[in-house]
Image 1 (cartoon, rainbow, N blue to C red):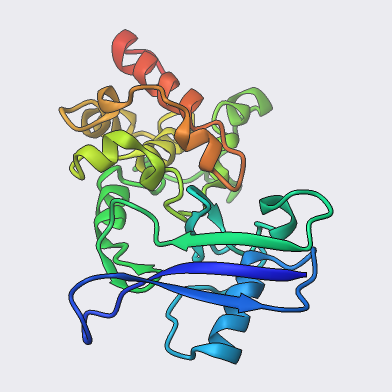
Image 2: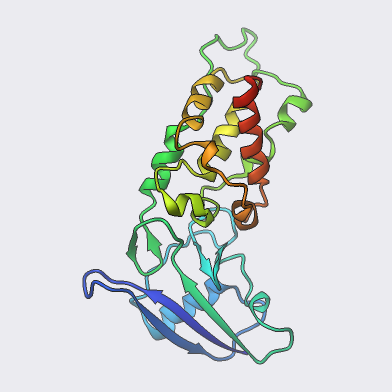
Length: 241
């Protein structure tokens, strides 16, 4: 199978403007991922191509990018899903995720995203002494189910950088940060729900969400992101967790 791939290229050391690099690969398999194709471009055609990747199994979240106009992990997107069934050639367009500064080619600066993530205190907070018998702090299965879905976030930024509200104003804390706030707000063992609700309830918090569902569609871990945001809104409106 032939793959025609168009990649948004940018190298600030050479020129100020981005450009499109176009490459053609032969003998690709329908089971190849977009990451496989990008590797071939880098290893066989142009070694200057820059991209992030690590595990190649959809766990690390490092290779989030915009593929044919939608955010996805390059390692999870098979090229067969991007063309017509039985076609002899496939056209693919790859760009860096939107809303974050591009450092080079497909690599973006994740610091603004991580700053929002850190702002919601994404770690367990409980100042009470641990159980004297040395056991863990226990909770019921029902309590665990309240936040089970939001524990799956891999911080790939696919949800946040698919959000028009984030594109419009980078001060918006974004879906990923709210998902990680949700994980601890609804944890019955944690004691900092109020502090997190203060963060996500301010001017650039959850009320910036317009319920467009781009974030849910973009999540490679199939987290119900929009639902989680709605649950945080309810907690803010009712004062109940």
